[in-house]
Image (cartoon, rainbow, N blue to C red; front, side, top):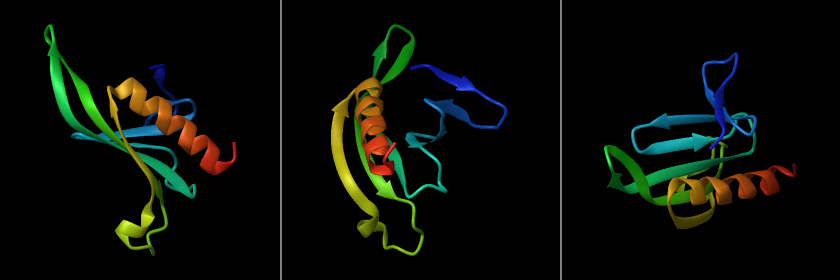
Length: 98
């Protein structure tokens, strides 16, 4: 994953913010209509590293006026963070019309 630190305080991936809190990762601008929510369900050990194994990907509306269950647009479970980010990036680009 080609994530990098830019002038802002957030890590970015393909020009969009990537924010992690525990096992939850948000990808995208909260000011846009949609963001991607990644939830790491399980991890596995590879040597000394612990890597994401099962990840739930969700395309969600950012509208705070909507009920939480109505915000969900698409959902899928992927194996590995790379696969989850890959599909999440595609969903977000299509939803935002980029």
